[in-house]
Length: 293
Image (tube, rainbow, N blue to C red; front, side, top):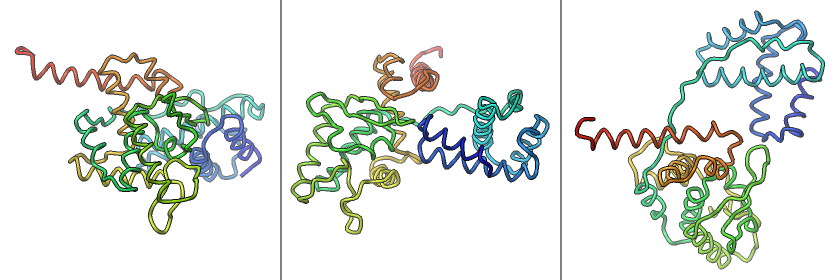
């Protein structure tokens, strides 16, 4: 790898505040491009070569989403090189990426959410799990935002929590009374079970990892456990509760801009997919109920 590669990754980390996960993905995508590049120098790259690389990715039977992600990494890289003056012109500007099919997000209905949230037991792990599920749905958090919460990030009086979202951007998220009550009940029993005053809000209580902060994967396993009990759905993820949060708000009259702020979306277009979910539900109800639908 050359100095431009390292400088680009440093730029993404320090100036753009990209997460470690995103940086790892960009690095892997660019390493693959450098491997295809061989002895060709970056200033000598032209659109014909980039089309050949795109064809190379497609020949490997990669999904459209994977190909689009790798091309997005290249676009960002070449824009950076052009802006820094290393390249006189951006060779990737005229290259089109594969169009992705827009899939509607999976959403649980309100009854399914209620059954899910009420399924944990009343012991230490059960109270933690109930608090996790309630918080995911009440605040519409990403799972990475949830596991990053500290105890002092929750304002029980103001009814909000301080969250670090994508790009390390901070925002305040409203948290409902039921979620706050579940968090309180969890912290009460946790303090009785341990004399330590741990910083993280949600802890691992298994014997071999007791007291450590929960991970994204741990939350996925917790959700899987309760989904298996309460639903026949497949592929339900923690993000499904975030999708359900947004859709239920819109179904009950919330405006799109407010939902955008609550979700921490930078662009309104990202939030607009939930209007399609709401519309599809309305169409389904119409088709069932209207005598001449």
